[in-house]
Length: 383
Ligand code: MLT
Image 1: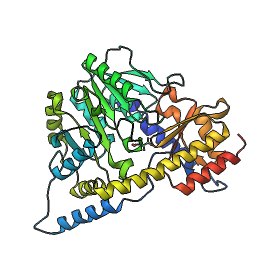
Image 2: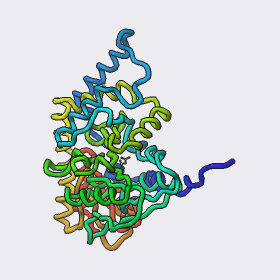
Image 3: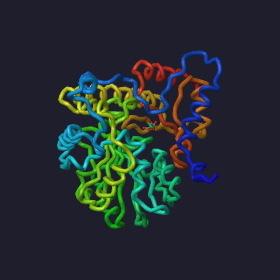
Image 4: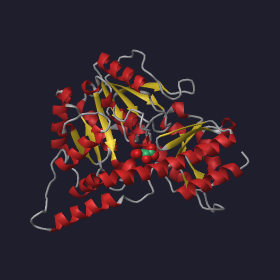
């Protein structure tokens, strides 16, 4: 039988399944294994989300308020909530520019339906592996922009010819964050190339007030950028599945085609999940969100302070700490050492791209007590 052989070239599955394989293969650990690996959240949903979700369930239980298929692009009530949320950053968008999704990951893959196979993608390295895999799957050509110590893991364009560009800000896995001026350079570059800028904003809530919270704060972005957002990290929805994609009307044909693509290839997102999203963006929901983010950024600082104390090179931002492996180890060697000496799970940096070799990523999205315990172990271990 024929099949898409490009599947055999993908890396994302390899990274997290290999982590799992090594952890499961570690028999009789002397104490509890602490996971600072995959970026999954620990805190339960906010009260505001739960209340709205319950309202959604009640609506579905009554004949008068029952709903069948949701609108393909999202319920207006959630699109309006997102529109108001974006106004806080002076990013002014129309409701119909928000396409509600079941999370960022699938959108990153599906958006490539808009482009012909063989397109040229520019992808930072290291970065979220799904950008690379989605492009490998389509048979696209990839130009990697290397993140290094010298550029602070914030590579910049230098005139290459491309069809689309990926940015994750603050970055996964490094946490490195572009300034407004640097983002303007990327937007101008995309426009000069007649290219699309895919802006992955999944970690936006972790930014401080002065940072750029949406690419649409940057002049010209509505002409070239598609922004992908997610409730996963900001509201703890990794198990609910809810996100959004913004395709501005100013992008004309791409806006029209994305509507067609979504109307053709999916039937919207569950009403109950969307109600939970409305709750998360309500006044009380946003207040609870602040507490949630403070908890995780507290974890991040705890890890970073511990590394500082140990004189261990690291970067922190978003939901992660990015650290250099000790003793010149490779990413996987250090993964094994961390597991065996301290019973801590990290994510090997090389899994995010070749330039991540020699680094590891620690997630701050875990339980505070476990993060503190992990830091005690790091300090007590003879490296
Ligand atoms: C990660 O560990 O990089 C993330 O949790 C993956 C994701 O968001 O899909």
